[in-house]
Length: 156
Image (spheres, rainbow, N blue to C red):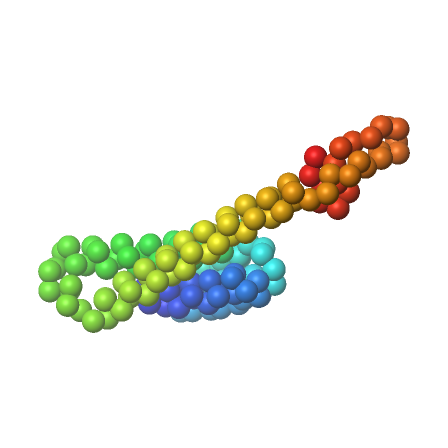
């Protein structure tokens, strides 16, 4: 189950970083998970339904789930699972499948952290560029006054 969640998380991460639409479904131990988002930076819709749906039970949909939060939650679940299994049984530290799961989850966390760092650097860079932009007076016609702010960058 955790491996499938990480596969979906990787797809969501890739779509989130490139601002593409994403729609994925997976069967997870008798339940179906579907994740969808349109193009751009909008949130996800995560739907969980029973494998045997009925008119009485349409499942649960979580709307407005941030892509970053979904991806990190999947990765943290996988990391928590591997740590718990290794604590319970030391022999699991040599389990190649668990090692691969842990490595994939850590790589997702690293990519999200790197993306956040890059985003904050870009925001700082944009603010610095705006602050140094033209501060030509902008006439506010309705008020008949002059505001000291640039019309193109809105820095005041």
